[in-house]
Image: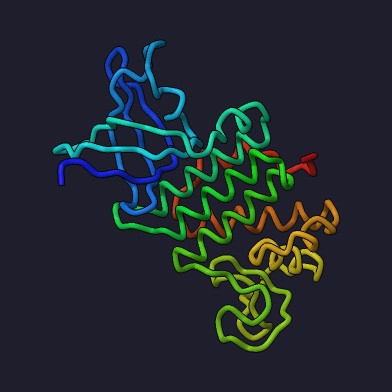
Length: 245
């Protein structure tokens, strides 16, 4: 059908001509979509503000040869305004949408869509420290993509844990027999923090010490960069200091 409608979160935008914009969106039912929003950069545009990064909208598309065309947009989640006003939330949100862009294609991925929308909503409401929300999102998004880390049993031979060697290239913690020479060890609090980020156990996450939080963030960043094969540009701007909600 030439016309279709779907919920979508705006991942990124690019200027096109004098008044148009190219959108990259993650949709609920159609996977990642690239579309043109005509005239949205004009001050009189009816839905320009609804199609900014981090916004969630109900959008009607017209199928095009290379790019679809946005014909209608109704706001479902105005998260952008709350996010861009806070540097930590803004940089974390940028890392999230860049990750979603890299992990998703044209095939529908409802779980990835719902995970991203939930994470952006949490950032906009200041439910948790932004970099912790980001770390939890990254681990969950990678797990949905097929790269679930292990923070208890050995990621290589499945020997029952707990284990303390952390090797991101092998998928998490590994036993003494599987650990390569010189493999770093993590303390129990850091491993518990990582496991809590993955499962969403926020009482454990928020009770962790700043040092454990910092070490865990380093592991999450390394794990993400390894599996995405090339670095996330936005991740370098994320503050890893203990912050306020």
